[in-house]
Length: 314
Image 1 (cartoon, rainbow, N blue to C red):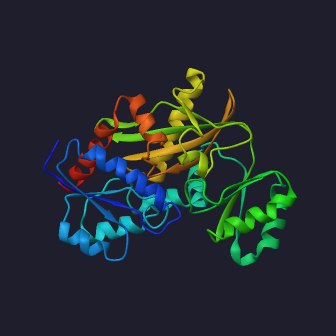
Image 2 (cartoon, rainbow, N blue to C red; image 1 turned 120 degrees about the vertical axis):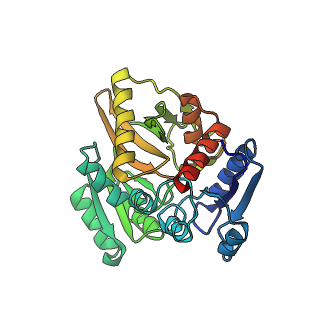
């Protein structure tokens, strides 16, 4: 470990997930300071590039959620400036962030995916609703194509709710992914790249109180969700979920870390929902929990990610 590295932690920005990014960044900074003396926090606001240039860091750790920090935009900027950084490159970030494109990749890799349709804002809400009803019916999940942390996602039960759900999601994104709604158990699997290969963390089941789901509030409010690790699954299904997560990570072109979200219907049936290339690092986040189950505490995890980025520069 090179403890003399100069590290910049990027956080914040103007995305809908900026506040989560700030909480995650504080946790990352605290953990990094256990092994590195020179750690500087830089908020993603106008002029941050000048602050970055003055610092001239050895490694950049983007602790950002949503665009432009997670969709390849920032990654391209850092590559043009020659800064090594933690996480997926431009291609992996942009592909994973686009839920519609990512599902094409999953399908091509023969991963289990839920039946879907897509709509665009330019067609108007009424036409979008009609297309969804024709393709999938009313019992669906409406998702903005390029947002994270379940922002703008609505679980729809009937036609009365569908119009409002589409309108809500169009406020965040011009493209929507709509999937048939399935009632199952929510699972997540972290993935980490190492010098010895790509490995999956233990499977975690996410539970929330009755009549709720793992939305933005339940993700980031302490006590509103529970992480069960390892999930109560058969050994065979556990291996399948872990292999799905690793395959998705590799097929999307992810690097260093990712976290796959899945839904399990029964002992024989599971589906991949999406992959996060910069998963949350807050005190309630799933990826650090999975890392602990893998045998890597938080300071060791962030140090591992920093060292991998530094190795790429060398």
